[in-house]
Image 1: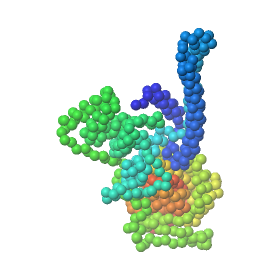
Image 2: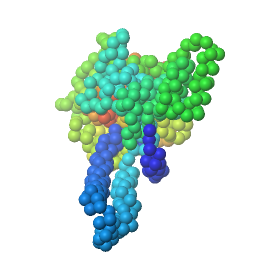
Image 3: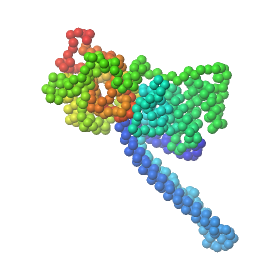
Image 4: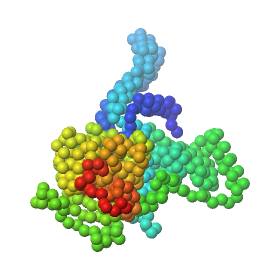
Length: 542
């Protein structure tokens, strides 16, 4: 069990740090997570200094102990003879009144600890906050759901799903790590606190298993213990209707804490429920509902297939070519175009941007990255169904932005100068970063999209600035296909029909990034300014 005094100091320190914390959202951008590595390196250096100081302090104490031990072993064997010598008597009295006080009440340990805490607080602004820990945990649960990953495999650093009763690798990461009982406990606790027992049960099961393997031994860096995990898991099972297992876990918990009044009451409650109900069946684990429940199955299937939908792409009307758009600037250097869909019209331009250009764009965007928002009535808000950070780049900020605008205009024939198009939006996704099914065009007259007073978003031009190892595809839900992340490529599609109405077939989503650091750049083109570039049809229904 935890030592009360140590725990009080630990929690007082943690709470103080959390209260001092300001804006979080590190988890929404992998770029910010990468920067945290250098912060921890500084913390490691500070901890090493603290350890060296403490070792030096303990050596001094050991030296004092050895000195006194030698005196008792040699000089004080004959107390009468020893005390007859006034020098020996003086040193004994002086040692007991002065030296022991200096050792026992030394402030050196506290000074060393305070120096460590001060160095920690100096880095505090760059440290993750409680929201980041919760967001990272939710990101892992999102990956668990969308890619049907086994929790027991994730704990071992593997990305596996069960297909036809057999565990298969979704991806084999180059770098991986084993999760501890405390790692699993915190993920399960995040779900538990949201009354999401579908996710809390498997993660807490793994936490209990790992804590048991460790013999229930507590480590000072851990927040949870075996007792904590058993407590949360028992109640999670109770809430899912598995009362007999909740009772069994509660009995195990009482083995470690036999006087826990709350658990004793729970045991009595569970026993009474079992007697009253007789043999019962668990209602099982039910996945939480979602705002996009009607399209969830399609969305997740398209994310898992990662762009491999043969039935869709076997359409003989789809083709690849070298495209110039009849633009003189492209005649000698046409762009590789691949038509992915005719309804909605979606094409991908391969090698649209160079590696150097992509890195330059990312470099310009990094200092300005902020949590991505979505339209919420007339305003904008951060939401859990969009996990990323974004920045807006003006053409005046970098010549490369102006060059991209010109290149987009040559390929599409559209006027992409503001206000007829929005500034270039650069997006970096976070842990399990995603954007659930949505439309790019406004579906409400009060949408912030109309603040430019240049109409709705008629088209989207999205550039992949990076590659990823797994996940992160763009899924077109109703059109039933997805496009994997292809570095340096760009996707283009029309959001509106020629009559100005939104095209429902363009409902799309950014699948969660499983492994990798996903960067994209979006250019949204508006209706006004395209009167001669994208003409209306004579057919009002088209």
